[in-house]
Length: 96
Image (cartoon, rainbow, N blue to C red; front, side, top):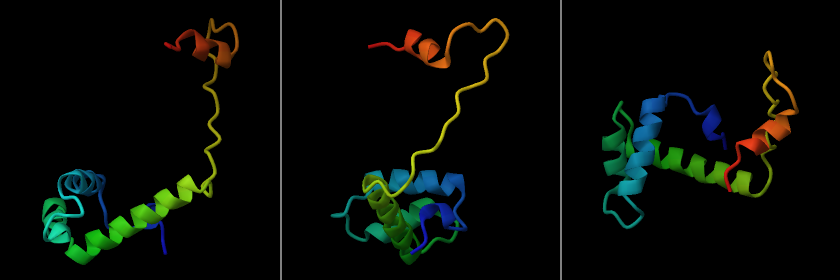
């Protein structure tokens, strides 16, 4: 099964509409997938949105199982007048 990142044909706007529709139409909503497809628009069918949801569930399960590596973020390059380490600068702005 392909992951969401490999799905084609979904615009960022459709993805946002999909997320919003999922929040409104829970699993007990009659005709859930038809309602979500209507909210997403763009010619998506009930089968399209149900499949997209299944991919989302699959991706979440992989993330929670630790099968998706954590991105190797690099600290920003220090600019002029930057003194101290990146970590110290981050901690300075941390509000606890």
